[in-house]
Structures are given as C-alpha cells and as structure tokens.
Length: 328
Ligand code: MRU
Image 1 (tube, helix red, strand yellow):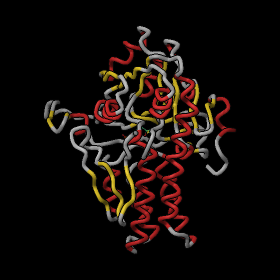
Image 2 (cartoon, protein in one colour):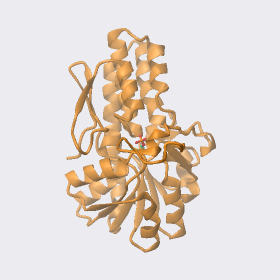
Image 3 (tube, rainbow, N blue to C red):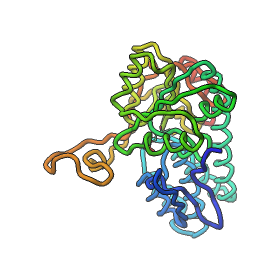
C-alpha cells in the first residue's frame, strides 16, 4: 500500500514530516491554522493536492479554535505558496462551507476523500498508457506523499504494475530540495518498484539514447489551454522528450486545473530562498560571496504535452478546455 501523507485524528492534523524523509518517519500533530501554514511554507507537507488538503484542515482548526477568524485564516493559508491551484481550492472549499454554516470538518473530509478518489481514478485511466512502455521517467515527487494517497504521476505506474506491467522508473533527483531522490525513490523502494535515481542533468542523456519510453509528471497549476506549472526543470524534460519523440504525460486531479486562466503566461511562480540552492543538506557549497536564484517551478507550454491524465480519462491538449468540469 502507498503511504498516507496526512490524516485527521483527535482534533489535530497529523502529517508525515517530508523534510525528515527518507531517514526518519516523523509524524507531526498540528493544532492551529498558523502551524499548518508554517508546515506548507517549509515543505513539511508539499505537493499540490496535499497542500490543498492540509490547508482545508487548517481552516477546520481555525473554525474550531475560533481564531484566527474565517477570512484571516484563509488569508494566512493563501499566503503560504502561490503556484499550486489546489491550495486555493482546498481553502475555498472549507471557507465557503464555514460561511454557509455547514460543518467545516465534514467539508474538509469530503474534499480529502474526493482527492484520494480522483488520484485512484488517474491511476486507472493512465495505466493502459504504460502497458507496453518499459522505462518511464518522472520529475519531482508526484506520489502519495504529494497527494495524500496514490499520487498523480505515480498512480498509473502503481496501477500498471498491479496489472502486471514490467516497469522501470527513472527518478530525477530534483534539485534543490531533492524531492525525487528523497521522496519518489522512497515511495518506489517501499513498494519494490524497480527504479534508478539520476542527476537532473542526466535526463537528456537517457531521453536521447532510447532509454526512456515515456515521461509522466504531476502539475501545480494547469491553464485552460494546457500550459502548466510544475517543479522547476519540468520544461527542459518536456522539450527534450519532444525532440526525441518520447510521449510526455501530465497527471492531475481537477483541483489543479485553473479554468479561469487562459494560458500559462500569468501563472505565479514561487521564488524561494537562495540558501536552498547554495547549500546541500545544510552545508554551504557555493562561495560565501555568491548569490543564488531559486524559482520553485517553471511553466511548460501545452505543445510539449502528449496528453493529460485526468480522473475522467486521458485528454489531448486540444480538447482540454471542454473537458474541465464547469465548477472550476
Ligand atoms: O515544491 P513542491 O515539492 O511542493 O513541488 C511539487 C511538485 O512540483 C509536484 O510535481 C506537483 O505538486 C504535483 S504533485 C502531485
């Protein structure tokens, strides 16, 4: 069974501290909206669908404590990370339930269950794409840790494996925070799925030498025309995949789709602290006098996407706008 990234128990949000993995499995118990906001900002919990669910429970904690108030809690949680659309959907789901006088916990539980269900359906919809592909490349962590359960990019791989596909996964290490080598590799190793971690700059070598049959990644925000934001470095993989005739898939639940955004040009890209680039495992690598730049995401134009794997099936970019459910 895949891991569970977070769950609600005894009036607190329990989550697996993703900063400590793969070395230690530490479970934190969060009891305030501010603590949830801090966990999202520090990538203690991370991945677009997972931060949406965490923020939904952050709203529940505010409602139960009576502080901060409804709008203030929503503001604090929205200010954590700008790129993932799911964050805003999760907050709004509970904010509007609270405003209507509905039970915030029930709204958050339903939201969480819907995300888990959608990720499972992504697995079912995407698995046939990998029935014949032998070697698949992925970037960052779009597994159970990033989505509560199942994953987005990893869900079709999991389901294809359950159906007997003989898959091997190339795992980009994903500098600067190493979500690939720390988290994706941890998930795959737990389930005995064959894989190898590669340096980010080795992906082109494997794509160009016929070692990759398909690429699949998750997303943080997808515009109506199919342009999408994902972990920085995704754009390069998409361009090199197309150059080498390798299909490139993007898997996401509906909460990641931002139907109000026509294209990717205005997607906000989070800029993180330069120290994440200048150091490794807390140790300074670059000269003291050097500065860094640290965009957490990049935006890939839809022309590089072969298809989107959604909870309701595999959709080509040209048909995406009409496939996104109206409520988004
Ligand atoms: O900065 P992170 O670790 O939150 O970035 C996560 C990603 O870029 C994932 O690929 C994305 O959220 C999709 S997760 C299903």
